[in-house]
Image 1 (tube, rainbow, N blue to C red):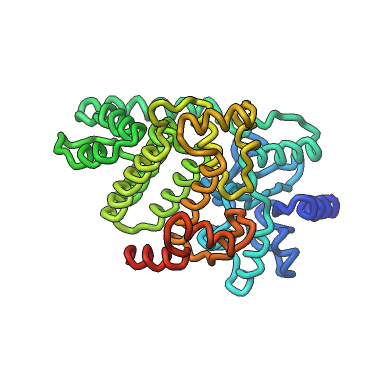
Image 2: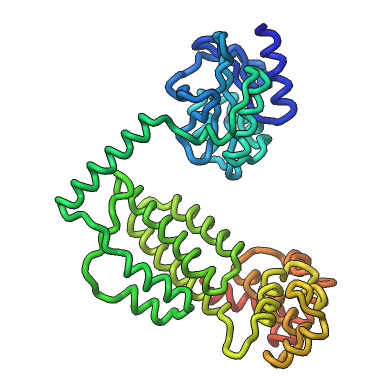
Length: 400
């Protein structure tokens, strides 16, 4: 029987690249990693992967690293699937995972290669793998949704704890008072009014009570920042006209930057910069007076596809209008031809890349789909009066 389980584990890993550990009692008799490195399986720490009332079940306490556990019924065997990741693997995740898995220093490099080979999986996808194996091994069908449920006892305990905490907060006057402050803040961002935002953030007001979001002060500050950047993006920037994908990318970038900070002062500084950034982007994308929804939709499409060989026909098709219709209305409302606007957007993107990236002229030209580097340089100089390299030296000098 054990031979069959070993064969199944090896075949499953070969097919999916999801690591598998086969347990017998408290010992690992097989792991995908040990199979690759040729080392012996290790003692299994039950505290790291507890079994819940469900079979199969998730058994990870990290939001970025997933594990699942499957009890092979009527035997002493268990399967542990994972680690799997819903975010790209980083050095920090490798260190955390290797530490939790007890990987030695001499095997760290091979372990990292194994982690990089694991496909990115959302929790719902991972649940489907677990219930599939459960059906194959235990011949039982359970809905994947069951893995996200908890038993009634835990639900009742949570409800009781929440009720007790609410009563205590009321008695001690611990109430949130940020609602109207936040409504006004994110409305200003939506309107793209950076001057009003600066005045609002510097205004004197009664102390704000945000609630307790973590035990440690630094973690509390980071959690508040994460809440603020998500709301600034979803309640402010996106309704203000900022591209949805770009907004979510910025949210990700700011959260990643915040997680690297080690002082509350730096987190507060980053939050101020982040709010202004979203506000300025909303200001730049705000629909001008007299611009029709069709023309604005066309403008947005062009701005968000500067790294593609955009044609007037493709931009018009995005709005559901003919090219002739859009060219006429575009020129009539903006006073500029669609083709000229496409070039302007590409050149504005080039200015940003020249200032804030280290990409070469060839890389920028290729990224923005110019026919050649020399053509890019010629149209850039014609538009701005300086060559791309001269512009880079000027702006880099000012930023330093």
